[in-house]
Amino acid sequence: MLRILIADDHPVFRRGLKDLIQESPDMVVADEAANGREALAKARKGDFDVVLLDITMPYQNGVDVLSQLKHEMPALPVLMLSMHPEQQYAVRALRAGASGYLTKESAPKELVTAIRKVSEGGKYVSAALAEHLASIVQGDDEALPHETLSRREYQVMCLI
Image 1 (tube, helix red, strand yellow):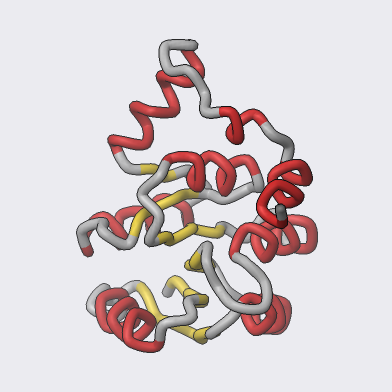
Image 2: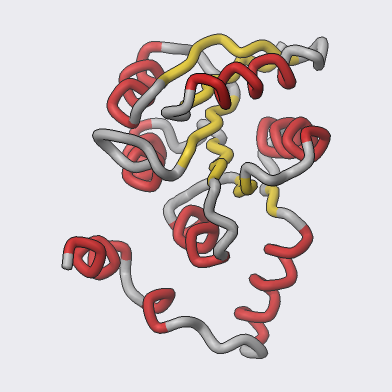
């Protein structure tokens, strides 16, 4: 049974995720968090197989939570969920250690597939994102200026 922690600041979205996940007989939502600080606290105390983590949350954003989780629990798979379809969010999350990245527009079946994949130690991104990442690696796609910034440089830029 896969034990999942859902961290998202929208109660209705958390409820929908929980209902969707629990349709799978091998998955259970073991706990929920409504903000970044709560997500960290619950992840530290719980025994989870996968964390579903929103990027945009109050008190501490998802990428910062992800970085801290990866520092403290490097083997814990974290699947990032975001309302942001822009690829730079995905690239930043993957660089910070995410096991996968999905937008909230993804099909329900894709979410379940992604959870299974990351729980088995794999990585998961959508087909469109995979194509974008391949273009970056091959040099076919010119990176946006902010995509070349380090994590700290990006944080400072966001504060300006």
